[in-house]
Image 1 (cartoon, rainbow, N blue to C red):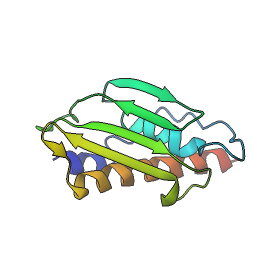
Image 2: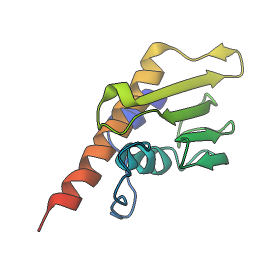
Image 3: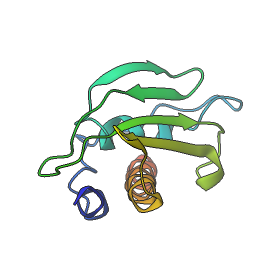
Image 4: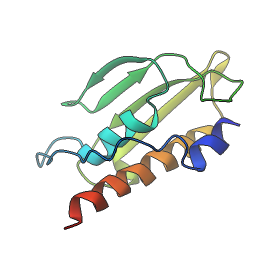
Length: 121
């Protein structure tokens, strides 16, 4: 059920604020802000924009039965799949690749929307 929520865009809200301009060597601001927005239902434990790492505590997506803990790390400046690493864990260990992929897809979708909003006149 968690994957269905992330894939349908229910978790991809965020108030429409655009990302700040990125430094050439820093983490991609669109992926970083999209990660914060998409996973905002989870309790935030730490966030470091200079390293690109965001650590969330255990929590559930609205309507989901399973709790997850997520560490999202934006590793590069490009707006592509190589710049995002998402580690998803349940209480019993690593979550399925389907759950991880659903979260990644929701983050990529939101990051693209933030980028498009920045390009709009």
